Length: 236
Length: 236
DNA sequence: TACCTCTTCATAGTCACACTGTCAAGAATT
DNA sequence: AATTCTTGACAGTGTGACTATGAAGAGGTA
Image: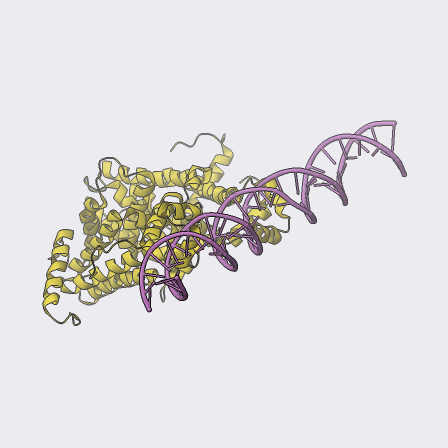
């Protein structure tokens, strides 16, 4: 994050080419020769950077997963109220999926079901995000925002499963009719979930309508504040 | 369905073996030789029944998908009220996933993301089920059970996405703690969704607590009634 | 310029596995 | 006994992941 837009190394070019080709044709139907041609290097060069074709596949989502997790981990503690936090995490997810459709298709369709992928650093980042969401939900149950008997695992699956299902379907068979983006559905979606699990029905949720722009602005603010300080303490 | 438990043909044995091995090692890591050994036939015999290794993979879910769709299509029209219908469809899904974990893992993790699979009869059956659910939701919006401004695609993704997410997670990393089955989560889950989209809040849903046993009993009842009649007219 | 060393890449392989062709052995039919 | 039909063993072929080798270029020392 410190060095912005450094020149693309050969390694970067290979990963960019691989992402494009894997997303288009699927891992199995893509050949190394194809990728090496697209990247402008030879087959053997790829094997200097990546041990196997699968290692190349696994390397692709690592940076973007880590960056997203770090960005969200930096901002979330500054948001008050679990509803706001949960909403912010969902916004990060959606933003990630919408602005990197190739990455998302790769991760959701080809990597999540791969046993070996589950032992890579990229998957660890994804797990941390998922765990952060679960923690927020549990916090909401503890602090009385949500019903005492709500099942946090179920809630998490509702939140993530729905978004993933929407994304996968839209990715594979086009979005239905007049809809423009998943973001448009977020408000009614979250409202249904929160309505169903809120302890006090009349409570509207103070930060419910936080938008991605707000979160980005918050991120910049935090960045600046830390730039002035010694860069290590940011615990709440 | 007429001939019950006919002796296993070689073709059946090959598909059984393939299901086991594909589910265990994944499509790519399974070899034809392995499957032929498990099925007690030679490699070439497999190619007498299936054009390619992928054709074999696609053939596996066909029967079970069709059977499930037909069973649900037969029962649903007899259930009054969209909430009961939707609940029944969800019960069929869950029943399908829980009693055929190998099939489900194969379909959810390896087939749904395959472009060519989307042109097979098995996928057509899956699409019909999904469409039937969507129709129920739309009916609920039209007849005033659900809010006028509810988005039927969102609701469908909530219903199916959540269940699939739960199943995939439990399949891959074990179910959390004291939970026994997805069925246990169905009541609170459906309650949250319906609570969030019902037009009249006090309306409890007459058939809300229908169980899988009830549906099976209903199926048998219909079976018998039809057995007495000419077997071709059952339009509502 | 001549000589050495080190990095980077292209060529020409090897190997595993999906898939095919051939033919013999057995079962069923006549 | 003669004939088709079905099945499987075996020996291929072709593709594509992966590797071993050596050439081309960059940098250093006389």
